[in-house]
Amino acid sequence: MRGFPIRKAISVAIGGFALTACGGTSGAPPLAGSAAQAQSVQNEAQITNVSGQYSGTIKDSEYGKGKATFNVAQYKNAAGGIFTVIGTQTVSAPATYVVSGTTLRGTGVSPGSPIACVFTESAKYDSSTRVLSGSYRAPHGCSGEAQSGTFTMKRQCYYASDWVARPENGLKQC
Image (tube, rainbow, N blue to C red; front, side, top):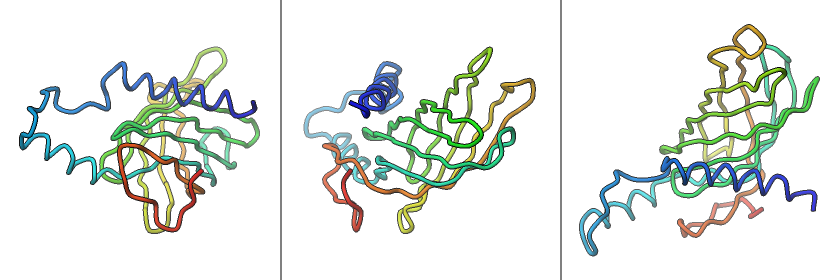
């Protein structure tokens, strides 16, 4: 039962994408057998599967260096999960992304005192090294001043998906 809160949080993050239609297409439904349908299938084949479990390091402007893990699920170009930082404090924050090629752009929320901090985030996945590296920034500041940081994490395993039929070469399934 230890993994249940993480699964629940991932479900909530992905559900949030579904409710806001971030993972959608242009909005026009393709006609059966149309060129738009063929294009959709081709585009799905080009989407990088970034789902899985990651671990690595983080460097934060406020808290310094620490370890980080990221557990992310994905459906087509929508991804979301839990980013956990282990340093002077342990903080877990949900994050949601739009995946475009090997680039992730999105938002994270970190519980704060007295307010929660909202971060803009971007990352790049290198499929040859299985490394996700990126940065984040709290545009309005969390503790009175802007907070930012960088992270580098290696993918440990991937989650199977029903929307893409290709295996992840040399990487085990979670």
